[in-house]
Image (cartoon, rainbow, N blue to C red):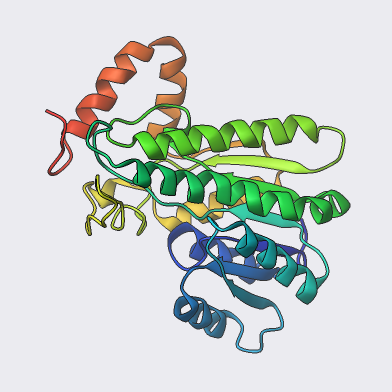
Length: 269
């Protein structure tokens, strides 16, 4: 990666996506930012680059294939290339599987998994030419199931399987694939997490002071892309869960249960 390269970021209107946009912009990169809110995207563009020479935006619902295709086309029309694609857009939920409506799980899979697949599919021709990077923002839930997060965990497991396959297929093409697992991060995603019926729960159920900040996560991902790492594990908790689960999975299961049961208004006993 080098300044003036082109970076496409989904879910760029808040949290990790917004902080990634700031980090890349400060380093001199050109950006194509995507999110569902036109108002938020326009405000971010105005704050970063009022001239629109280095930052463009595209209203995008990544669960819609055509939106993803148009996003990639917009970036190519404006800049002629894509060097980094960050699949960051995501949603989550909190409910026992026995209670959740199936439409909630489908929506989560459409955004978290299919959104990354759609964007990556349409970006691959240019990424092959630039030998660029594809990034998937995963989670602890991408390698260890989290109780009351069945749809979220399923989507992140699927994302990781897709990204790992993509990496192996491109071992000789020069395309770099990064799976980033930030751990618990103080972002808006938990404030907007869905309940069993798909309605926003409106508040976080965790102690945000113990979480990583979006800025910390963005800076870590930026460095991992520059170093072309295959994986990024951030936070002590994420690393502990990953390694302990390899040897003491039953014990980790019980700790996960206790952790989620201790959340405010938890449905676990």
